[in-house]
Length: 278
Ligand SMILES: [Zn+2]
Image (tube, rainbow, N blue to C red; front, side, top):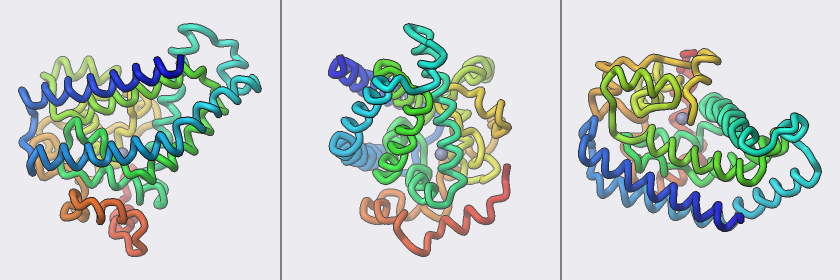
């Protein structure tokens, strides 16, 4: 069963990657500031490293943890007696809510930002940006996920569904694509769109410290962290307005990129301290 779910997640991942790669090639919103091949190879390299780490350190312990929590009968979902489709749907919503707060913490807590910054140092945004996460962030977030699992108590199927949806939605909202205003309004009222998320990657910190949602867009509205992306703002118009100004030179140097969170004089800390938005 678990092997089937795992394969399903891989199919969703590869299908989504190829699908959005194709669309952003046919109808890109922004031009790319650097070679797409360089971006692709750098980000695929990160994905390969992260996959190995996850397989070695995270995958099995988390799965055993889900089973253990289930055997103990722990978790709000079980206390509420949720089963079947209702459990799947509610788990998707609740885990996405946890993810929203976790993402917010990644921007607020200096220690977490050291790692999450590696994602935001990208100088552009396309489907390959969805692969760009520091291995340290994945390991730390596995601990957070262990906590979500014990609080909510999702079934293994619900957990795989959530992970597959996060992967697919991240590919979608990082894609270098856009919709006409009318369609954008309808989609972004429900889920996070590329335009919605481009604000989150804008160098302008007014936008960069907002729009934290991953799957459903309502959390930012509910918890007052939503910034409407202006269609004519620099983040959506020019390729130089995405990323972090102080990290542009190192965005594609593997050694510097991996070592950045561990530097004692972390430039980005300054950037965080002057950030007064929210
Ligand atoms: Zn972020």
